[in-house]
Image (cartoon, rainbow, N blue to C red):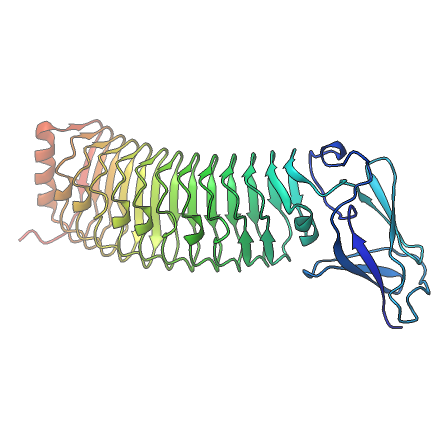
Length: 414
């Protein structure tokens, strides 16, 4: 039996789930839910109807008897819908097949109250005129290849774009602010963030992590501030952080961890403060951190480790104060600490260990206060006597609040 096609005009019939968005928030005054039309087709096969739209979205419904309408090669009659007056619509097709769907009313423009969950491209089409979502926006459509909401300017809650295995293109060209967290994680084929070109502020945490195909951050050049933490982790194809050139402050932690192809962080030249620590670790290709030239204060800890080809800390000369622990460890190529020449205060401990090529700690000459312990140990090329001499000079005017552990530095002292 060949499949018959039934013309299906999707108006208020789009199946969508808006958490916290009631019927009154989007229904027009006449209650009929008339909208702009999105032309799709319904293909009947053995009593099942599959709705197919131009962007490739499909949905199967109906289990009624095989109808004769359309079998003669004509398109047949359209399915119809009846308003059940209870927030639902009943779709009835010519063979008697029926499906009850949530009735959202007219295609919304302006503000949508509450949370929005998008599960397919039909729902994206429905939201094309929305300018603001007061709650959260969550994308849960793994097979969708493109997300475009051209009029959206503001999301009051969080945005979650995670585990979208088919998503290649993200386009939110009007989005300027996200009130809560913004997560772009685990999207294997997403290659760029071009569609975020006017985003200037994220109120909560911003996470861009585990996106295997992400090559560039060029689309977020307008970003000025992140109110919470910023995680940029395990994006294996990411070569640089160009695109963050305007970012001046991160209210929480800033983690750059395990970005295998990253060779520089020059795009962070405007960043001056971090609220709750900075970690830069597990990079096999990172050669330079000169992009941190404006960083003057870290409220929390500074953690630098396992950056295997990093030879110097040049770029940190403006850093004068670290509120938490400072850890510099497990580097194969790091030769000196001259980039820390402006550092005066370590709010907690200072730990320098297992840096195989390190030959000098003289770059710490401006340091006057270590409020907890000091450990400098197991640096294979560092002369133990030179470290002790530096420490004696430090004690002349400096303050150590805890214990001293300078040991097992086995470099040649000749």
